[in-house]
Length: 138
Image (cartoon, rainbow, N blue to C red; front, side, top):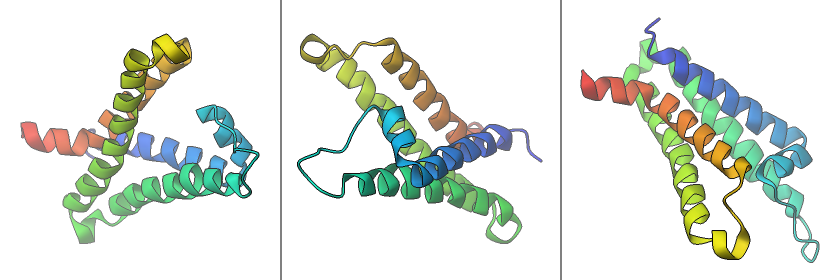
């Protein structure tokens, strides 16, 4: 196996675990993202199961499926699925970092949790981008 795929596969497995855990135990997902459903509206837990659960689980599972089928589908499928999910993680890191700059005065967003989360999200994104980045540098 190409060593550049190892971080991608590990990140995909971590993403599957996080998605599966949020799908089965939405309170766990809520605690990770530090959010709770609005008690004024019914059905809020469905959002955790859907967004942090099902979407994360199947998005990362697509990467693992592309890896398993790369003999038939080529490495381009793995590169594409990894790029898409990596962009999601990098987008989260950018949004969180922007919040730490723009929202700190009003909402105290410069927390150790958010600094760690920016690092984790960036690492996940770069790990999922590894095949794409390796392709760029040749």
